[in-house]
Image 1 (tube, helix red, strand yellow):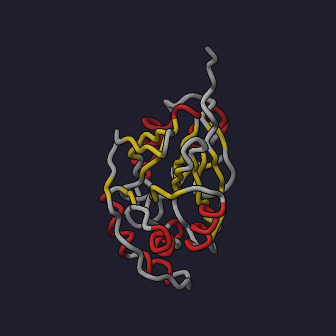
Image 2 (image 1 turned 60 degrees about the vertical axis):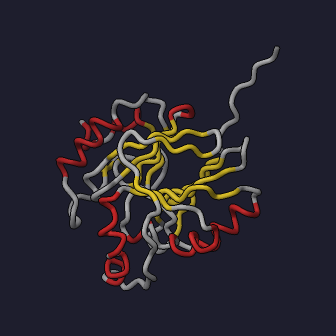
Length: 216
């Protein structure tokens, strides 16, 4: 009998939109099912990318609903009919995304509501990949992170960045809540865990634990 290591997931970081917000493609290479995490812009192009690479989109996942993370949500939903998953507390900002974008002089169409709500402890299966849902508020109400434990990856939206943390000078943000999310939900993860954030370059939990000035 021969045993085989599980196949690695297909992960792509796609900086999109005027703020170059990171959208993530997560594909199960065994089943060809896929998720998009934070469709920040150009939903039709995302749908085309998924189809051209032989995947079927089964989940659209929102870490939170700030306008720069949802600019491609409606077009992606229309092109694929994939269900949208978010925390219920993200709804008000999602409904206000058009107005928020307008403050930056950016046009945006109204975005669709989530089809399903997620809470701490939920599990999302993308083919044979398992994402654990972490509730990580502070930067935005209803902020979630998605932990791919078997492959040491966490998609953490705008919670923890390379050398920094999410902004807490925005409506609905809370510095104490953000630091609590980092300390209680992210710092317990293994040092080798790759942190894939909403802006900037990837980092690791270990690197941020020892070098991030907000955590010293």
